[in-house]
Structure formats: C-alpha cells, structure tokens
Image 1 (spheres, rainbow, N blue to C red):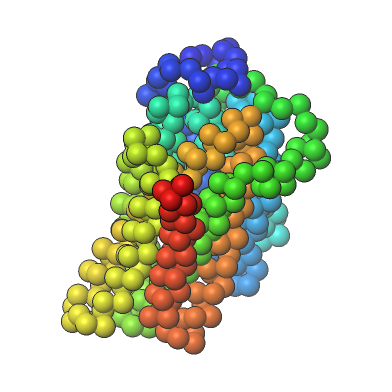
Image 2: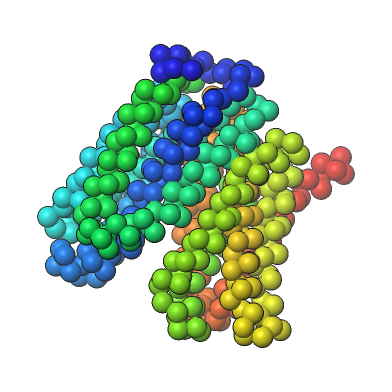
Length: 407
C-alpha cells in the first residue's frame, strides 16, 4: 500500500493483511512521539544550573509538556475523523521537530517552557497513529495490530528516560533534544512516504466535531465503562509510580537510579500489548479487560504479603508485582481500544480522545491521592489504595458480563 492510495472509510472491513514494515513504521512513530513527553524528566537537575533557573521554574517544564498533551488530546486528536490522518501525522511530526529543536536551542527557561507546551501538543501524533492502525487492520487482526503499535508507544515512554539520561551524560542536555528532533523528522518523512491517505469520515465543522464527543459519550455505554475502568486502573498505576521513589528512599535508602530501574520491569509489562491484542481477537476484548483488571488488583494486593515475608524478599516481591500489574494495565488498555474502535468506525479519533481523557483524569487523581496517602498512612496505605482502585475497575468490567450471562 503506497502513499498515493486513498484508504476509504470502510477499509477496516477489508481482509487484506497489513504489511509488517507498515506496522513497524506505525509502532516506531507512536513510540517516538510519546517519548518526546518524557525526555525532560532526567534533565531537570542540569537544566536549572545551565539556564540559571530555580527548581520551581524548571519543574514546570514537564508539567507544561503534559498539559500540552492533555489539551492536544481534547482539541486536536478529534481532527483525525475530519481530515486525512496521513497529513495530520506528517504535519504534527514537522511541528514536533521544530518544537524539540526550539527546546534544545532555548536561551532561557521561559523559552524552554513555551517550546515544551508545543512539544506536548504536537506529540499527540501518537493518538493519530493508533486509530490509523485500527483503520488499516482487518477486523480479525485489529487487536494484534493495535497491540503491536501500543507496544511501540509504551516502549517509547519507558525507554525515553534511559536514552535521555545517557545522551545528556555524554553530550549535554541540549543534545538530547537535537537527537530527538532528528528522529522525529525521519519518522515524519517516512510516514508521509509510507502511509496511505485516509478518507475523512465526517464533514462536521470543528465546533460541531467537539460537540459530537458529548453525544458519543451519551450514546455508548461501553465507551463509558471503558473510560471508567481504565481511569480507575490509571489511578492505581499513577499512585504507585508517583510514590515509589519516595518509598525506596525512605525504607531502603535507594536513590532515583533504582527507581528508574523499576521502569525496566514496567517494560516487561509493555510486552503484554501484542499478546492482549491476540487474546482480544480470539476470546473477545471483554474477557481480556476482566483478566487484565483482575490481574492488576491481585498484583497490588500481593504487595501486602511483605507483612509475612522476610525483609530479603520484599524487593523481589515488589519487582514481580510490578511486572504483573503493568502487564494487566496495558492488556486492559489494548482491549478497551479494540472495543471502542468497533463502536463507530467513523468516530475512532473522537472515541480514542474520550478514553484517554478518562485515563488522564485517573492519572492526575492517582498522583494527588498517592502522595497524601503515603504521607498519612505509609506505603501499605498506598498499596491499599491501588488495590481498591484496580478491584473497582474489575467490578466495572465484571458487572456487564454477569448481566449478559443472566440474560
């Protein structure tokens, strides 16, 4: 399939398999876009000294990047239903390249913060790529292909901090943004040349397009269940990761390097995405959401076993549980995406934006609640919060299955 091919709205009904190089292109593009959100986090210590800025000012850099991403999901991601996704992906790649270059050349912290906001907005090209993958995939392989692209996205998130730290240590923090800009420019050009053109699925004006998202939310109960369940899992996920470094320092006198190494355990969980996609194709996405949310709840609950285990077993237990719950969260996300993409093929970008909005609300709530609970109830309190949130997600997914069985 070449870039001159116009992919019609009904393309997902085609049984033509998607070429492996095209799937790799989509997965790489999603990973590089998502990675752009996290390059700054390992650089914050050096940024303050280099730009003569306060810790508080430098701390706004990743905050503004995430804010830009959240705004982009709500305001830009729905455009994928209104315009050719190939053009959107290439255009956002160009903007993201320029924004990353602006970060690397920033003369002061103010310019860096402004450029970081644009980085977040343009990084939403990842959320144009995932619906594009769902449109390209035949129904029988949609779960597998979406899962593979999500693996690329998740690996980009998990490995971005490692790459950023290594490059900065050898060549300085500005080099991180330069290398990232080159990588995004390359994937943008490859996407323009390698992707087909996607026919728009709606002619709604921009205001009506945004308003239609409220109609989609009201019309599809399955979308609401997916957003609620994934939001609860994201709350647990965020509460754990936002408090892990503090806990490791307080209890084991381990620094940020150890906390970062736990991200490699999370990378093992990212491998769940293709497997979850295949299971969704074979057993149905609803079954995978119940399996994933249940596994997440059990893994968080297992962390409380440290009360009965010797201290030497605490960290191995934590690593094993981290791999397990990350596997469960990512498997559930892939299954939820497979579910919502089948609701209305003409509205995939808007449906994806609504699901991810629920995720971001859950992540924000998890960060806030996790810190408060850790301060007042300690680490086991955080474990209890995560277990309760994940168990609630399982209930949200289990109740419809029970009602269907009863019927």
